[in-house]
Length: 283
Length: 295
Image: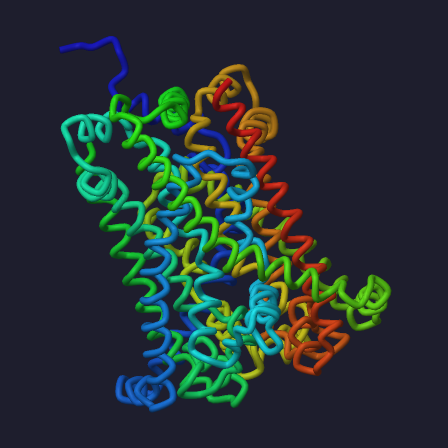
């Protein structure tokens, strides 16, 4: 059968030829080459060098490096502190998002913009900021400097925006009629929260939690001043890696780096899997 | 989408389910107040009070001391070095970010998903690990160490390495902020321009770039803030040589560890003010895009 209209493959070919700059297959070879070189120099080569260094002594050596007592203590503390911090974030982040969307009070706009402050503030300043109130000579009589509580406090500070900013847009889009219907059928506020609001917010909460967790795993700057970097006590993974680099034991540093990196990649991978499934579910 | 969200806000602001009587209303009001105080109390303790405290501590002995602290030669050097690094990194990452966003959104090739993951990778890696990875490639004992030394190029413990480290940690911002705007813009305008005889460059400058400019600018603001404040990666590749490879965040640590609290607080406040300026810029920009979305 003859068809006067071009078939879809032809249309695609035309579209492709017309797509400007870097869109088409043949166009912009130079541009693509430059992008590739930049990405290779900045990300690909360094990651490859890191992985090579970590396994250069074989799997046995890799295992020995990450299971040395100090490394193990640092990794355990990192995982435990990050886990606690994301639970606190999930609860308080959701409450803050709720207040910013459903509540109204003078100064709400200012509070809303201040949420992003931990992202904008340099991490070393974040540490100093916390130390000035909760360190030695604290005007409120709380001194957490050089304790494990300081690790948690600093991590809470730098990861604060993740859950709030994930939950907020979902809450804004949430249809109130479901909650109203449930309430009119006699559901109490707690039942509405548990049965209707929380299930809708769950994917956003998980996403915020995963991002906070990945960030907490690698955090360094805010911990330097306030934790004192005491081995077996307040030394987290990134601080341990820093110490090993200063001691020129690069294989140990690389091994622990790769171990933490793997955890972060798995967490973020699970996140993208969950969010993909969720969006399919919605469709 | 903008309509539905506007309607949602309108209803959220309105009265909740009615007809539950005065007692119910009072209970609801008490609940609202309770939740509000929990949220604001948490924010005050974790965020507001400490930030206010550092400003108080900085200025408690007068502005004169602060001024002399920030005009120290080493402080000045650190400040200008930080700006120099920002001035190199931000244009590089902006050009890369816009180009990469175009490639990811408009290109069709194998491994696109993997490329996206690769670009986001710097966010999943600790800054310390970024520093280490750079040393392993460009350091004295690194992959290119001999070649670089043979050509008299020093990367680690000098400014090129610090630029490199800063560029890596701030790499994803412009790509991430440009990509969704580019997707929303579509290709209709560009195709119209092409039909009218515009070259790809003309259509990029006159159609695409004006369409995505707020996304790009937002990415640039985030890149600048991150580049100014980067600590971990730069700490490793710079060697922290006072007055030579010390950026402002490194200077804060240096002063603190040398028991010069005034110097540390003063430099930290300079960085905090820059962070507040960043927040303000971000705020103005989101308000602008929101207004445009509603129009």
